Amino acid sequence: MGELYLPHEILQYIVWQVPSGDRVTLSRLCLASSSLYHFAAPRLYRSLYLNFEGKERSGLDLLDTLLEPGYDARWGRWVKSVSVTALKNSVEMHERQNVCGSLAKVLSKIELGSLDKFRRAPGFGGEYSWSACFAPHKQVVDALVKHKKLRCLQVSFPFDPHRGPDDGVETDTIFKALPEENCHNLDTLEIRKAWTKEQMTAAAKAIGSPGLKNLTLHMSYFFDWDLENEFSRLPPRPNDERSKLVLIDLSGISLCNAQSIIDSYFNPSTLRKLELRDCVGYENVCLALSQHSSVLEIEELVLTSWEDCGDVSNIIRLVAKCKRLKVLCLDLSSFTDEGILKLVPAFSESGKTLEVLSLCLRNNQDWHGESLYYPLKALHVMKSFENLREIGMSYAIHPTDLHKIVPTLPPSVRAADLRFPWIWVAESKLHMTSNISALAEALPVGNGLTHVIVGDGDDSADPLAFKTTPTVHEMAKWEMTELRELRLKCFRSDWFSWEAIGG
Image (cartoon, rainbow, N blue to C red; front, side, top):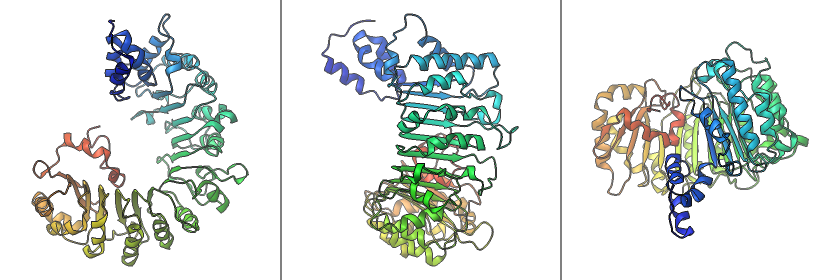
């Protein structure tokens, strides 16, 4: 390892030009010179990514390296975050014990007060075999709970098809062992794919933590939940104390709680991001927030549900109350032709700030609801939304008239998810490229539209994706990765899977 005789300020500037996630470059800088090592190593070791998937076993190799005698022990005070990806393939019990034993030793060597974040995820494919999933043994949990200043905890529970939802399983251990002091220091809590009563019961004290600012709670979709069951609901907060939550992201949670619990979690004074997906009783939250006496400061609002919520006026009032929305995504039933028109002036209250707008609205005439489509003249107001980057909208026109939507698109739009009645989409599918070309030619000079997705509101068939640059063409599979960054993909969850876009 050589030496670079440059001022420390310049060396530090060089290192800080490298993104924190570019671990390859940071590693090379560490090897380049002792001077660069001084600045690059703390950034490299700030986050440990332990991958136990596949044959590489890179996670176990990294653990062994960190525990080698003589290895630079300063990593113990540099580490702020530990992320663990589960074993995907079947493993022997002794190997799993080796992983847990080494992980526990590494956690114990991290300087107390240094670790901010611990994340454990089962990885793709690991959900189906319990024996193959990484679950934190007691020795790992014991090492983790010593870090009393842990501020971020992310856990994804692996699914075991051989157990019932009322069985106690090893994955609840981490919450059972988590002392009250640890819970009170948590700033961010993410729980995904929860599916047992034991898991939710053990996690209750963390979910209701008084200092929590970011809460993500997703139930598993492997079961048709009995949504009247207590363990799919939000647990009571201590003394019904009002939360300080800034972000609430719930999926599959029953919100049929007592009003006092809803009031204690959804604090309009602090709430900035709200996502409720397939949450029975979500309209109770909409009602509570819409009755707030002043303007709401919510910046992101995502509501998706097939539930018949009856009166949608509370949803419309809630949207109108939020006058600084940056993201508005609604995928809801119970609307009417009149109701979708009333929603336009409501979201127009945020016309100066909206960056992402996606509306997929249905009626309840049959079991699945029929999609509703906007007449063009109702959407001309969007032309003035100067910050709008992504738009998802259902238009009551034939795809052959696609160019007629231009008066509804502001110049700032980069991506559009356009939906039309399925029978019209089927009729014009073979001519869609020429329809998109006509749209591109009708756009004024300076318009930035580059990605167009065309489908039907009922998802009768997979949508088609096009790029308008350098010329209009249907996107090849290798180009589909560009769609990962779109917020619009939340309504195309099956189509926007990792496999479908090359992940």
